[in-house]
Length: 480
Image 1 (cartoon, rainbow, N blue to C red):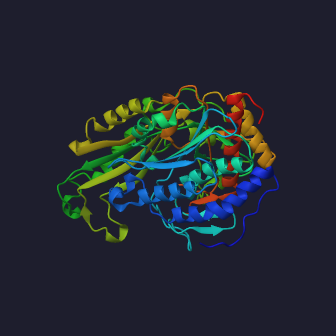
Image 2: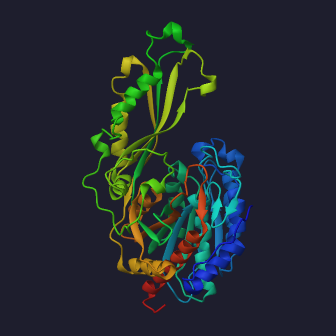
Image 3: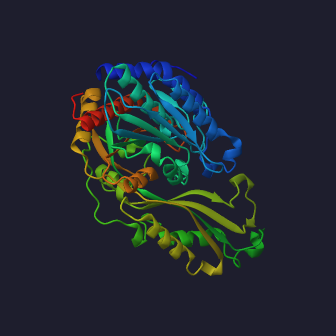
């Protein structure tokens, strides 16, 4: 671990912020470094995940760290049957006569390296530089367990009464959470009926305030394969006679999107009217938010429009390809097959099952040139649009942002997908849901050089504590 500079603490936030900072420096960071070093890839990226044992190792590490916290009666348990990824449940009983339950969500599975990391950095080598901790899973979403349990610990250390807190950490989120419904069923008695759900797997537009997530897009993940030959042949012999699988694959993808504009062509994948950005402070700059090449023309008429597009526009991305050799290995061969992995982001209110049916229909109909086309949808996740925020939740979150930063919170629609929130909305209708997180400018989740912004992680820890405190005050009607 490289420590190039110490973390500066903003002179705001009162005693909880100071307690959070000391806990992160002394207790959280050493354990988070060990977690960062574990290659606990999500099952979609490691078909031998169960035999490899990395997900179980990460769950055990988080379980043992939680058990060592100074929280009376805390119970940490790892659940999981053969063939199902582990689930960590940390249960902290209420204090001070408070009632009710707050459920806090995070995940421990990771994306693969995905690209070359900068010199001195690596996906499973924790490196601290100034106020950043680099490594895969630091921000997405390894920090979440530590933030949630530390929030409980600092409340107890400050003798602030609170309700019961259950922290749920799953291990298949990066694969679309296929194991989560079964886990929720198995743990239903333990979870009970929460009074508040806090999800720590989301993002922020800046590091100068707290951010609420007002919506999340859904997602379809599919593989599309086009085969034209049983084996490769010399391109000089077959070229001009046998259509190439790559060109035919392009034709199929053109059914999904306009190649000139990127607009998704399937009506079933579009929502109705798009809402405006809520509580967006001035100054967000898309050119600074992403590592774009000089001169690139971005989509959208303005930065505000781009934020709305990111939250409410369907979009296609080709995220992987098989059947294509590296450039240095490419010979004069007409290849037999090309397979693409695609990701289709869906507006929050679009039904993923209906979108799946539309995708399969348009790609399977009338195979171009009579080629063999195979379409497999590997995951279909609904999006989520936040219901109107309960007044007490909004007040607690606003108080935390002003306490920590001296500014009110912002809110925006996030372009990613967290299946957990849609599942919880259906399972616990009417329960307030708060989605927030640390994935801000440059943090680069899923890409190379992912980092956790440590001051923001501490701020989210304190915000979680304030939300828990407010839930306890509301449930008893007593002053905090």
